[in-house]
Length: 368
Ligand code: G6P
Figure (tube, rainbow, N blue to C red):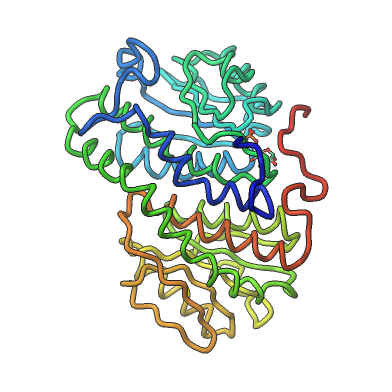
């Protein structure tokens, strides 16, 4: 049974390790050789997607971070402007009327009260169509939306979301691919998206192989009270998700910053007591990130890096590096999420917190 713990010490760890299969299942029967099957969102959906002029994504918590990454992807691959907002803010403010807006909610449970209320509001205000990306079939969110694209993560028991998040990212890729197909003229870009998606299960397995080294790294965090997470571009929301995980289960205050903003505030916090975690895949922003990291190092900060092995970042006295395999830039956010999940998991285990049921938090927030 998927809901049984088996040999794992916690559901969270089990769910982290289930990610290759969860991603595999989320992709299964949805891809053709060079394209995404149109039917996965229902019949005649291409007609609707063709009309989309704007996308508004709404979610809470970890699901919101998936939305933030999707915005980088959407606006790099399509000409469709994409906005992302947390449901509890969106639902209580006026929005400027927008034309042919696709309203997308992301939710593991499909029962989050604020997200449901935001959907209700969007329907009242008028949108072209609503789509839910959801892990629970027949959930309220799915029932209330015009379309749905399920994440096939299986039941997620740990309060801190892991496999739901990575499968949400995969599903958002599918949505972007469908939009590209509906708009036309991008068959090569769609084919390359599909090719990268198919590599995911193996690449996630490879990322999981760093578990032991990450556990050793995690010991350094036990006595810390704060941590700073850095990333740039679509890795900035990955850093946000890493910080959220650490807060949720280890109770260490953690904050994420886009590395280019360091000099506008957080550099003042850097000293030997502030661990700085950064995700550094080999992308066009790597050189920029490296100079940001140097700003931290030269001020006595201790860096914990998850860096592409070709990045040229070498371990030093105050730099620990976990060398990650080279991965396609387009799916790097999914891969670099894995080590951050493992890091917070091990810190929490060392600290002896209730990993699967952190204090004051609920798996699904069904009341406002
Ligand atoms: C709670 C959970 C989080 C989750 C958030 C949104 O805060 O503890 O793990 O990300 O709700 O939940 P949803 O089910 O809408 O994704």
